[in-house]
Amino acid sequence: MEKEKNTFIVRCGEIALKGMNKPYFERVLLERIRRNLKKYDGVEANRREGLIFVKVPARYDADEVIQDISRVFGVASVSHAA
Image (cartoon, rainbow, N blue to C red; front, side, top):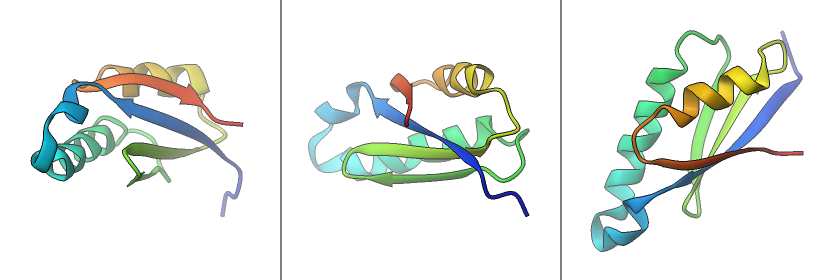
């Protein structure tokens, strides 16, 4: 079982403007990110306090993962967390 994972912080774009619908749009965005990262085994993606945190096993190229996350509509930015 692989323990080392890279963590990415995903910030949402226009979702912050949605008001009462914000949780719904965040859930949809989270599902789209998960679907877009299906080719990677062992991905964890969760949302917390308006951000989405994605953990991907360290064996995968971080730059490629960032590109794949960035392609999801609604993602404003992706940062590799330390």
